[in-house]
Length: 135
Image 1: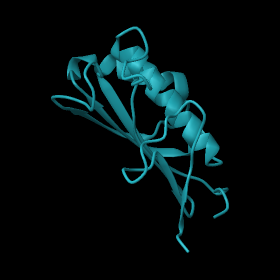
Image 2: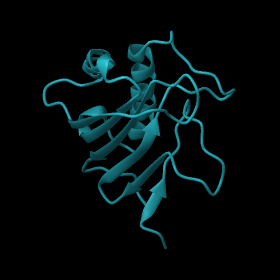
Image 3: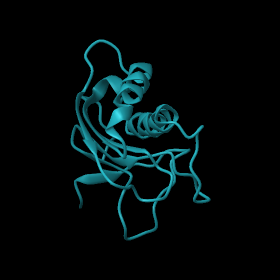
């Protein structure tokens, strides 16, 4: 029996079988794959700004973490990938919409491209909490 439990959430598209998981719970740890503003039809949601794309990514992360029995305050680490580091103020603005008090540890990395054209930001998360979903 696997010690991992796959988590799904409304509003977060599941990848094709045999590729990857959007969210896994292992004990009291919640691992969330990189989330972005990509839509099911291959488009990009939001208004085209890094702020709106980061907000959409964080909304997806919130849905997955909550589906796993956690909350945004349980997130210990974010890794943020952006295609233009000069937009980091917009990333900070989006983070302030979701976090209060102690913000999670965070890494911000500029990269040349993301999985589909038009994406500006992708965010992955690691959370820990004392009430994980039963395996």
